[in-house]
Image (cartoon, rainbow over all chains, first blue to last red; front, side):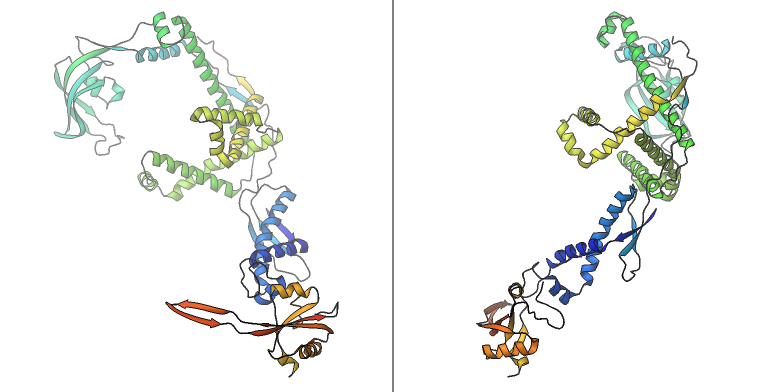
Length: 422
Length: 102
């Protein structure tokens, strides 16, 4: 977007007067206190150039801001400005090039047909959660039999590759839960069948994508001695159990409760799915000229997110790049597509919010602050203080969420034939 | 004494600028110049009518400098200053520029 802005003589004169006062404060001339020097004397002594350039520096952002208001622009980046050559007898003009939020002609966004997976919670899922609950309360009972998968055993083992012990492959008196997926393939199943006091060599192979490269794909032999075998004894799933793990009186009530919770989770997931599909549809249906600066900024964001995630995992960005075998430029290019659809989604959501007059009401903000305060365990005032100017982005987030909810609510959801939840 | 020798220079200071609004202009003048000489000189140079001339002999202040541990004292020059009152409405411009008017 390009604009030509005129600086009116009045604006210029006012700006020059202000510029002069500003400059005069730093001028020391015999006979005058700093800042008290008359303009004419100043100009005679120092010339008018310094006033003119200072005035321009001050007035340009002002007229720019005014032009932005007048034309109702929403710039997304800092403007690039250029003085146009002066023509005698005409007001000064500046050419401004700035990227603005693109005009979006919204197509259909209400009643978008989306399919929705039927929400169903099977009895099996309920039993599985129940079992997980029971497992938390399980007791270990020593048994006089060979170890089975699922038992908890105490073992010594020494792992060797080609006859040499390797790091991390040896332990004494370690208690392990004998589950195949916990260990490298072959280890747990090799131990199963051993009784307390028995010793045996177990063959196991490191998977080829094992994190420690020197071990990946290698076959190892573990000399294992089992000390004792214990069985996980689950508590009986009765009313007493229901009372200990929950507020429910009977195990049936607990089942129903679990089912309700699972259903609520599934509902929420289905709702999110609907939202994602609506957004996918909107993204595909709209063609938006994306401002390059917004996309660039989004890529920057994604990269810095990545860097901070890596840092949290204790990896320097440079090391991460090296491991992935990519340069930052390659990564940027890869992120570009995602960044574009994110920016587009943001713009579309904003457009819908504007079209539907969705705003963050004071009540919304209060609710958001309250939930933040709960989340961080800090009084609301502290949260408000910590947010400072970020309240604006908080409001953006609220508007975004409300708009998404609106889109979901107004979508024409077609339930795929619902199977009766067992 | 020639008019140009009587009048040394205009005094451009905050105070003299303030006085200029009431048609009083201040000049540094030759220390031996009399009020009459000043009146004639001003009238000749600026083509104005002088109503009154007030003069002051300004004594320069003594200044002490401390440089590299050595104290030296100095003295600012004495000078004579003349405040000239013009006929109301008349102005003095220097080199085509009216220094005095704000």
